[in-house]
Length: 429
Picture 1 (cartoon, rainbow, N blue to C red):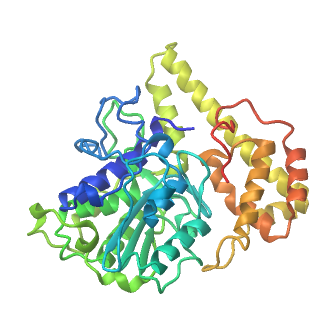
Picture 2: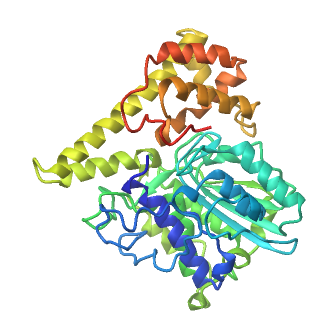
């Protein structure tokens, strides 16, 4: 279920495109996946325009629409990355047609959960599948080096224990394997979005690397220097923020950003400084990315005139979102108790494996477990991704699909009549 509150991810993607374009890359070498329902959305206070910071200009203009709407799904993403044109469905047909001397940059932003990344259409992207695709790209001589910047909750879990260190891939993630990432420039923050906006404008990790890239000569700044700056800016205080992580071949961190992003000639005389003034731009507070939709609905409700259709709509959206969250949380908790007992249930579901271990032993069983839950209890939706560790722990404990089906049927008598629970968009696995 998509809404205007997904502005933060699409604004990030558009901003990233503008950096590459100003850096001198040609459109033929840039591939954009974006649902593209924001610029013309009826809730957008500036029709046809997308901004990524409070005083920022339009980042939407000129962005290629390679894969939009129903074309933005995991299979197309994998096909494009592997350079496999015949596996594509729809879209521009553009793929990463690269060879052994090429440097590739991948930037991905969406909702996430342990072991999974969101896709607007179809099943989640699963960590095991993504890492297999990356290994396949390496085995085919598809690049000299590949850099992957990943923005999502629990994004460290996508690479932890899965991404090899010897295939010339350097990845950084917005958070470690156990924590949320954060939205920024949100209503109620300082600096806030313009008053007519009721949603976050970007994600903290993404804003950090992009606002750094906007103003420096990227011929002289290394990946490692940017990683440290982004890490400092994203943790920002004891009460919120996330731990930016690095995975894979960290030796590639010595490479200059120019190899991957190009560089804006206007910044030729602006070299990187460790104590960057960018830290001063860090907002005073941030919003847990998983709550960005609630912030949007609440702010919309707060601003709407009393008794207006807009206020009624916003109130309905808040109540539906809260009701769905309670349903998912309670259902997963009850399934844990039915499978492992009242005391042991929460203990098993919340267990975290040692650092460096993959989330689950059998990824296919994890997908089956998710489908079984959704068959009886309804869609997890982007919020329910937070429970993927619980499903992984159910698999790791040796629970069969039959046992899972029985517990799910007991926990959920029916699927709630709530748009967030609807399976109309298909299963998450």
